[in-house]
Length: 441
Image 1: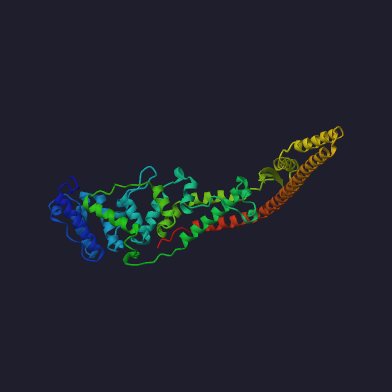
Image 2: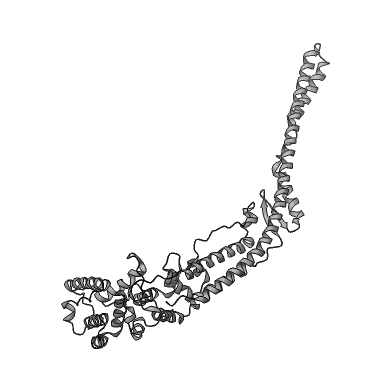
């Protein structure tokens, strides 16, 4: 017989109203509301005897009879209903271990996690079933191998997102372009990522759980997604008997639980499950921080490539940079033809002055032209001196930058040793946190 009684609008509306009434009664410690007539008229439906069994369990009475009738109709839905309903009532410690096992089933990387499984997972993480419920979920999760989906980058992005694109260490503060070289940037970035990963793991494992109502459940704001999901699954189970929609993969749930802002109890469980991947990723980051700085790097100084070595700038590359710097700093001027033309014209006029009756005007003009040519040569010489001074200043700046960059690389090498030691300490602390695991209580 179909368990979907929402085929008619009236029956569907009655079931929705009943789901609201039942959830309200569970949250106020009142006896569970009786099911509507549409359900009691369906003798083969699992929900009426399950509600009867729930009422008996909440009141501390014997529920064996109605529980057996409900299980005969649908054992899995009955078990899921009782687990979620008792958790909503704050009496999760009354469930039987076999009910939890029947309702939860098995997890697998090949199958998505159903909303029912996720709801039980959330309720157990929140302490609704006491330490035994959390241990049960941990064992189910531990039984699943994440090796088939163990891309460390995905897990690192979940734990410590928003990584800075460019990190400039103190030693290279005056040379940020050098800090962008891959062989120098990679160890720095790995050390920062490892420190942020360690900080996130400290945050996850250091949060203490506040215990609220019966059964160890914690009262949280109604807007919390982690609190709403079990009640939403219970509502769908009452209305339609189905909970299989909106299923997601196990990896997606674990990654979501690890992201900053998630429930700390869910994050602790997810970190425990992903501990081997996180530890492996941390070890790779430590190895990256231990990378030996290169013996030589080529950087752009004033727009020209110069090879830098521990003993100083490479002479050949520095000479080539100087040559190109001089070539681009001094414009090609050519010969001073205007000045030469004025000198030549003045000489012609001076020679002609001796051949004419009145030589004085021609001689004066010749002298004036020669003076103009001398002035042009003086201007040219002044510009050449300015060019020479500019080139000398640029060459001095080039040498100063090259020497400064070499000293900065020496300081970077000293920082690299400290960075590797700090990374080893971070790895040791991270390993200790991962071994601790989540609290069962």
